[in-house]
Amino acid sequence: MPAALPSLLAWLAVLLLGRARPADACSCSPIHPQQAFCNADVVIRAKAVSAKEVDSGNDIYGNPIKRIQYEIKQIKMFKGPDKDIEFIYTAPSTAVCGRLLDTGGKKEYLIAGKSEGNGKMHITLCDLVSTWDSLSPTQKKSLNQRYQMGCECKVSG
Image (tube, rainbow, N blue to C red; front, side, top):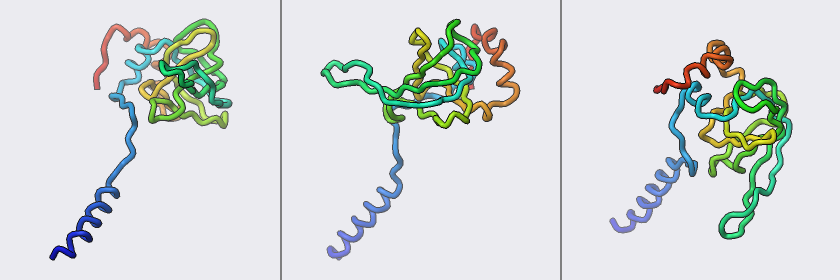
């Protein structure tokens, strides 16, 4: 019977490893689009034109902090500053709360995030980033006025 124990443990290990799933280092609760609109400094419709990794200073240990800089073509500003957004910054991977955007210039996105001033904004995995085509007609219409008018209310569910 002891000879069967190693093979049983090997099968158990294979089963457990087969069930493993990748996990992100950050997690976010689902949020209603109106609440995401209200929480954001900037809400735009845009296309990502290009992306490059840039230095963003150093951490407390002197290690360089990298971010992805997306150059974007803003189509419409729903909320935010008077100046168009030219660049969106995010962490370099979803494991550290970054967002990945398609840079082919064909996909249009609704993007809600935080203003960094001077035509720049920052997004994380927890910010609303949806393809424009995935939004319902009601959601698209609500972006113009309804969401802003309802920012005093908290939306749940």
